[in-house]
Length: 433
Image (cartoon, rainbow, N blue to C red; front, side, top):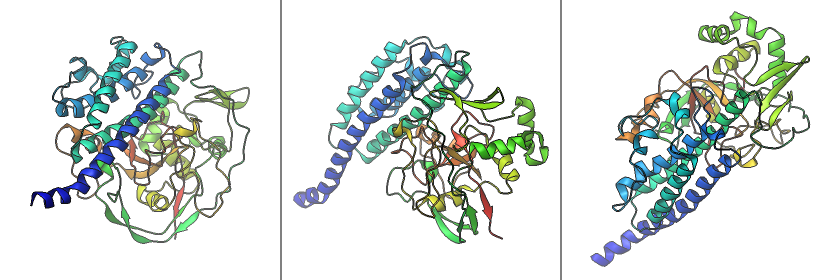
């Protein structure tokens, strides 16, 4: 019987061993990617927190390390030595079940630990994580937590770039995060909306690979027939909206959006400035003239919605977006390209929509709500997504600073509707009547 039992269990043990080996390689790659993104920054740069939504680059590096230490190493390695007990609260973001955490707006006051100490913290945890991943008989739960931790760090890689862009724009010197000249102005692909027939469709992760809890359970949704734009709206199209007094016409705006326009005096997307009669925008490689063929970026849900009304269309629902994206490959202008800025849409090689993945996150008309049957995980990990399902809107598709190994058709990003510091844009949809 013992022999039979070992034979039955062998494939599972072999599978877990291969999974651990794969995760060990991924762990090294993800952690190195974070360090590569932070490498151009000085210690002073990594202290800056220029808006309430952002965090310092130093904090991003420490918090992602905290995640591995808190949720994996401390409970799983009997001989694990906590690097600094004080970090348990200091680098906690919002996990109330773990313990208290400092006010987010105060993260730029953490001059200690030093950047050097944060690097030592990362090295300590990295060494122990590799030790853990080299051991045998890791449970599926632990392997799942490691995968979650890697995807968590990839989210913070995107935030690191987004946050440092805002920090450098807030600096009167307007320093560049990366070198590089502006590409030659292109021409936008022609809009040829695709008509999608009505149907009862399966939405959400099918369980074949990693997904966050908010992407499940997979369920059926009836989607009426609709039209879906070939590409995101461009800067040139948004300029036409502005030239037509788009920011001055209350009939185009949601009530809260109109209030935001008045309160914040919005008259253009974030990072846009007019000089000498020409529009310019701040990018990760400095200030450059607006390229009208590029996707418009750094607009709020309110601006995206107002532009859609002006264009005689609407924003797609997240279910419509997923129907279109489900069968398309994950490729495009993503983090690995190193551009960190949206690019003009390529000429379509087929009738399929382009720029589904990468370039800009696409606002949808869907509120961020749980799918039917959603249940958060037990314990502190359950706080990852579920408790934010109120007052936020869903974005889909990733951006030019989203890792290609991180994004997928079922991925649900979410932000409050006034958010503009993210790489967020607009794709139009319409009803088939």
